[in-house]
Structures are given as C-alpha cells and as structure tokens.
Length: 610
Image (cartoon, rainbow, N blue to C red; front, top):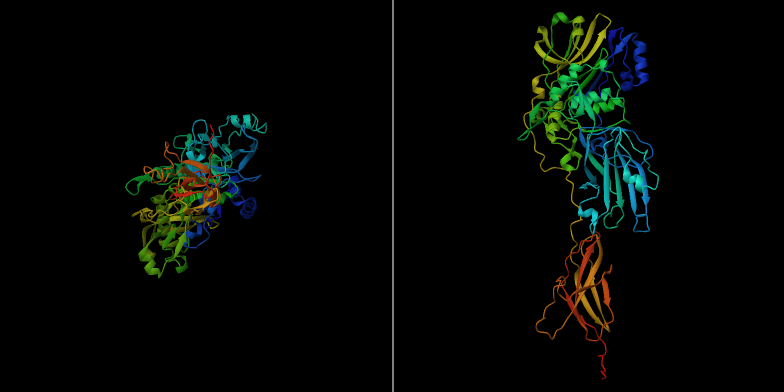
C-alpha cells in the first residue's frame, strides 16, 4: 500500500492546532509547522491511496496486517491491539505453566494464556488449532475426536471477553500452583486460556498455534448516540479517532455530520453475485505499535476513504458519489487557473491487484480477482499495475469494488489548481465542487477537493481532482474460482497403506516374517496377527478374517521395524500371519495379503503315562 497523502497548510487565523494532530504527524513536525504559521491551525489529509491516486507505485502493506495477526507469539513485552469487526486473531502468550497430572509423574499438562484484544469484545467464537477449527463443549473440553483419546479430551479452552468486572479464570486459580491467583483478572482484556495434555500422537507438530474468531470492539454511533458492536467502516474510523488508544480526539474535533453521512453510505446495500452486501465494512486488527497515520491509512482502505482535518475538525468521505455542494466559475478565481489535462504515462494505471483476508480460506491473505481495463491496457501498450492490499476487507466482492474505484479514479486524469478568492472558504478537503470555466471548456464538470490551503492573498488555493458518478458504478464481479489458498487437509483421518511383499520363512522352532515398508511418511509401527493353520482340515482351506470377533486370529506383536520372528514353535506348528501398518494418529491400515508357514525342527515325541 502506498504512503498516505499528508498535506499541511494554513487554515483559519487565530485557531489552535489540535493535540490529535501531534498524534498523527509527531511533535517535531507539528512544532515546525506551527512555528512557521504563527496562530494558524493545521490542515491534514489522509487518503486510502495516497499518491497512488496519481499512479506512483509504492510498497504494499506488510503481510502481517493481511493475516490479521493470527499468529500466537511468545515475547515478554508487546504492544496492545484493537480488534474491529469480526476476524480471526491470536496474540501474545502472557502466561505459560506446566504441571504434573494427577494420574502421572511427568510434566504433561501445559497451561497457556493468550491475550486477544486490549479491550472488551462482543464475543469470542470459533477456536482454531493451526489450520483446523476445534469445537469445545460447555466444560471447555474438545469434542473433536482428533483431540481425544479413549474418550478423554487432551485439549481444553476457556474464553474471557474482557469485561470491566471479569473474575480470574477459576481453572488457573485451582491448577497453576499459586502462580495465578484471584487478583489475576485481566479486566478489560479479552483472552483465552488453553490447557493441553501432551500425547505424542495428538500433538505431533508440537504446541499448535491457537487463535479465535473474535467479534471485536463496541463503537459509538452518532446516529443513535449508542455504543454497540458494529463493523460499519465509518464508525470504526470514528472510534479510532476518539479512542485514547488511537488519536484521543474530542467530540468538538469531529465533524459529526460527515461521519453520520459516511456511516449511512457504508450501510447501503449493494448487489453482489446473486445477492447483496453492505457497501463497506471493517474487519481486522489495529496494532498500536504502528504510527497512527499508518493505522488510519489501513482503516481507510476498507472504505476507499479520505480523511481530512480542517479548521480543527475531522471530516470523512468514503468511496461513493457525493453531489457538488458549490459551483465555482471564473468570477471565483483570483488568479490564473492551471489545468493539467493528462497524467504522464508512468502515472497511469490500468490494472489493480492485491490481497484481502478471506474467511473462506482460514482467514488467510488471499488474492482477490484483479481489476483490469482491456481498453486502457491496449492504449497504454501493456499492463501498468497498482498493488492495493486490503487488510480490513473480508469480502472478495467488496475488495473488487474498492479496487475498481482506485482504477477509475486514476483514469480521471484532469487536475486543476484553482487560486480561489474567499469563496474557497465554503469548501474543505474531500468536498465535491462543480467547475465552470468557459475558456477551458469546463461546463459544470465535477471535481473533488484534494487539497485546501489558505493564501496570504485573501484567498484559498484549491487542488481539484476530476470526479464523476461513474467512478463508483460497478459493472460486474469476477468469480473466486478456483479459490486460491485453500487450506488442505491433514492425515488425522487417513490410514496408512498396506505393507508390501509380506513373506514367511520357516526356521528351526520359529518363523521369520519380512515385509517392505508401507508407503507413506507417518507410519509409527506395525501389527502382527496370527491364527492356527490346519492344512488337513478341508473345511479351513483359506485364511480366516483376522478381525472376525469370533475367529481364532489374535494380535501377537507391534514391531517398529520391517521383520519379526515368531519364536518357541514346535516342529510342524503351522500358522497364518497378517501384518498391517499403524500411523502416529493411531489409524490402522489394511492388512497385507496373509502368508502361512510351519516351523522346522525334529518331531516331538510325547510319552503318555497312565
């Protein structure tokens, strides 16, 4: 994702710069600006595209943002995180403890506490172990047979929403040997407690990465003056501005009307493939280790938004058509108007591609169908691509709409620099204006105010970018077929293949069995079964079924190699033999075709007295 646009200029004389501005730009830059503009306020613009609106390619957002930070980490000091909307998330391990189970003598029980959010959350839903969801019962025990053995659960998870009055986890208090007491409540922190009991077959890959699907922060809605969970993009941006963990802005610094209008636009239903969805939502994680301007930029990607701070108030515009609020003409210009009708070739974009977070693919980073314009590609002599990653978008159709807006905005190439008189005070960055300049052939053409700066010559210098309703009109969606990044299955429910080439060699008082290893990489051991063989019995010419409950077959041994000797046999003692492989999950494969053999040696003579 390209860097955000930061435009700084004078606003209204005598106004005082907000403390929130220092949070965005940093105290040093703010001090420089205010020192040079005595008594003036600071105007800031943050765009979801930044300079990429005019085609300058810059690095995309880090992969860790796209994965919604769903990796469990172990580190002594870390930063808080905010969860907006609904997303799969993990976090730092804040407590780790091992103990001996009541029925054992080794440290086989592991307790983990994983912090999920630095605030109260609406709900903690699905639990993920690695790339698999694991269901848990009301008692916290895993109900998936993959995490059980002989009816005993080897994994338990308990969740805590981070309420202001939540108590300490009672299982930890009882089982952590006094290391977790009743005062360890983690109030205002959402977390999960996992208790794992070691078993080599169940935890083959070691401790799994534990994550959860979390419905995150409750946000304030100025339309109803209530706070509730919402993934409305405008309301989540507003919450970050107001939150002490964000910019800590005051309500007097918010243009409430603009956020209410943006929230209504975000809630509008728009068509998808055979259905509809709300126009813009935010679902992701804000890491407070990142600079506030970077967090704002990432949040704005979810709504194709532009955020401006003018005359001491924050205003939001989202990716939709806003009708013109002011008509400018020749009489509103105080000096010569500059028009740039075309961009340079290096600034043109005809393809927008990137990634979003896909719930259908384990909440992993997944490419959305790229947006291309074949006509522009032909005219430009080849593909000119922009990478637009969307870390807070979880719908591929929404991602396509946002990418299309970026493409269409780039192809509206005309830019106008209008040195306006005091009529320019009627607009702010993000507004739409209609421009009529007969000498330049502009008759009421719509433009968006990209930059606004007060001039010492009793006027306002406006930078205008061409705009029109077609930018926001989506024509059709591409299917996510075949869906990339599908999470593959594992071998938990796949038994191994049968061993190959089973043979029996008669020996003196024994029979040696040999076989080739069963194909596959996870064979743990083999099972050897036998049954008596009576070749003189015409009713038993074939080997019996070794798994017949009423049959004579029995399991003799579980060797780990590819051979085994049946010792202690009398000469002529004949048996059927079967061998099958068992994997590390306990799955038993098919038997190799049976073989029969009789031990060698001197015949035994029995003397019976009586």
